Image (cartoon, rainbow, N blue to C red; front, top):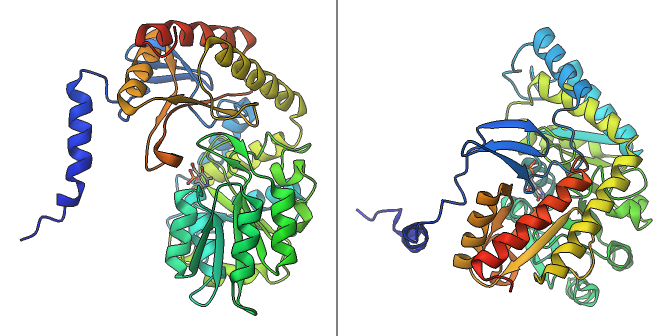
Length: 400
Ligand SMILES: Cc1ncc(COP(=O)(O)O)c(C=O)c1O
């Protein structure tokens, strides 16, 4: 018998070698208690959270939590069914209405996760005969959506407008074309030149899908994302998003103005063949989305935090993923996995949690300490974070 697990041996060995050095497993941390969007108890100690996607700090919002409680009491713990059978409750319709209002769009379709939203929409609209042109650094859920639909995948160099145009021009005349982009790329926290890319896509007859997972709630005047900030949201055919970041719960969605959009509810397998979100989740999401419409002050504070952390880390001598802060994600570049893991652990001992990211999730084989800020981090906390980075950086030799 061939052991089907033997393909994982290199990874098992790499992991064992890392743990033999005595570091704590960076991919197995337990949050023993979560006190707020910015503080949790880890290993018995209060720890500042700088590695969550809780950008707008909605997880403990009293109105959001109360909506969840109410729905749990009124509708029970789960729907036990698909959206197309017994799994559409009033709350599912209400959260779709909240999304339509948030984006000012005609249609909204809610999935059980953002992963499933990409999987479902991409695989359903682009099939075997169609071409998907996508940024090479696209999220795994985008690649998996392309694979599920069996479309022809044409990747282009990250954020390279000319490369996108060249690929589009090579596609046979008359073929179906979908360009898939992200607003903010989650590894380096950099923003896409959507304005130019959408123009090039449209000029070459392609439909455009933009995943705004890491920009919703924060970027753009109304928090609709990078497409809004760059003034081209009306030219985007499909926006994908998630409830697991700024919205502060779990779930995914697609919004669109396409006149035939609603047919997707009958033909999209990751929508049809899975249970719908629990009533408490859709109630928290709807309340959170409506509150995000009116959160300009929080957006401004989050930008302040991002700028301050970026400038402070640079001043300390760390190499960062972007020259300027472009989003709520600031990536600190590490020379290798061992140093990254040592730095990650030193920060945890200081009382700070960040994300350790490594290949294949990262571009170009990089090891990163990904810092994601929250609108509820106080100025004092950002100061503490910089002090902790200075101490951990010196202890591990990352900075002098
Ligand atoms: C760009 C992007 N799209 C989609 C997803 C999937 O979102 P979810 O956590 O809701 O499955 C993520 C999650 O990290 C993401 O970064």
